[in-house]
Amino acid sequence: MWLLARSTRRARPIVRLSKQGSGYARAKSTSVVAWGAFVDRFATSKRCDTENPYLEAHARSRPTQLALDRVFGGPVDANIQISAMGAGMGHALVAGTVLSNGKLQTKLAGFGLNESYQLGNAHIDATIDRFGKPVVSPVDGTVEQIACGREHSAMVVKGFDGARRVLVCGNNAYGQLGLGSLNPKSSDGLRRHALSELTMLDDMLSEGEEPVKVQCGLDHTAILTNKGRVFAMGWGDDGQLGTGLQASADQPMCVVSLEETPIADISSSTDFTLALSVDGRVFYWGNAEYGQCMVGKKIDKILTRMEVPFDNNRIKGIAAGGCHSLLLTEAGQVFVCGYGALGLGPDHISTLQPTPIKGFGNIEAIFASTDRCLAIDREHHVYSWGLGNSAGRLGDGTVAINAFTPTLISTDHFSPADPCLVALGNDIALIASL
Image (cartoon, rainbow, N blue to C red; front, side, top):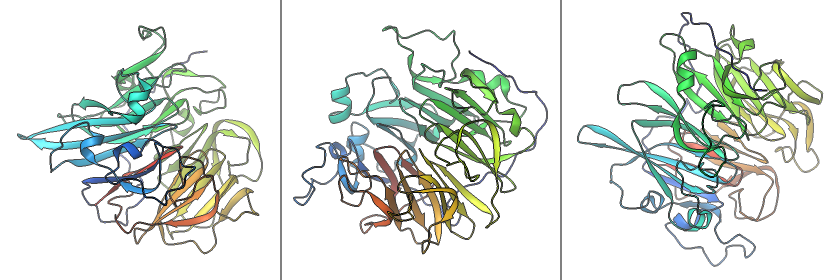
């Protein structure tokens, strides 16, 4: 069942959006460090002799600086600025911007899986994409933010005219690109698309309203606007779209249950979505079978937004994983809920209520993906925990070893430039550095 809901056009105030890492001084980033799958090809250094022999050949298990000329497929301007990054189930995107002759020029570079064009264009030779040249696409304007799902990607781009728009690419089998059912299939008969503008969103926005953030679940997409509204599209069988229906949508739908609650932030990486309101309340919808909904019980699927009771402190950050959720308070404390390697120790792998990670504070930003978490504190230290694998995705030098408590990652050779420039995917992690 394909659904379309158009919002009512009326004047709405612009809201103050929440940004993790607001305690950091903003710094321009000119380099990227990464670890996990498909990173080795782009590293500035060779794999060391002590690298775990069980690590996959294309991976790195520790943070390593990337050579930008390899990432972008050729020489790069010395003044290039990393403007946005994203990482999904098996692919990653990096946007670099240069001011040339008074005009911004942006390149979008992608590496990893590309069978559905999730890297931005129709280069489908998976062997080349993973281990050879990256896929590079020009973008008009500045890419401000990127999100990646299972096989699709979305991004917010500020054009030369100052207006923001959403670009999408990748798999559209469930409508997660929002291009509509009439959008033609590609030549091979599959619903996959190179980089395209989400024009259908424009008709649903009020005067002065524009997109400011996108989030990709496995097969759905959520969009936040500068007026605190949320739109969603794609797979909805678990209530991922928050519409109150167990149905998918191939065009953006306004999450009308939040219409009277201005939203400051959204987070999604699998089959549920978290939203943080301007006044500090947390809302949840989608799959909740592991109790990650933070209400003291397991619920199969939540079809419309449900408020999460939380009285410990005002919330400043949210992160939606696979079977788990994370909350960050203004005091810098991290609370976790759900199932897995939550950070609470090997004997505490399940909780139905938001539970603080003891002895772990002063945190400025949190991130979550399918089976793992990342946190950055106010001193720029990076912590990782979750389930390990042969791609070395935890970044601590281990392979296929789980980390049940936050583990400090060696950052001697880099310093995070901005917590907003961090991308945590299923097997890939990227951090923009000074």
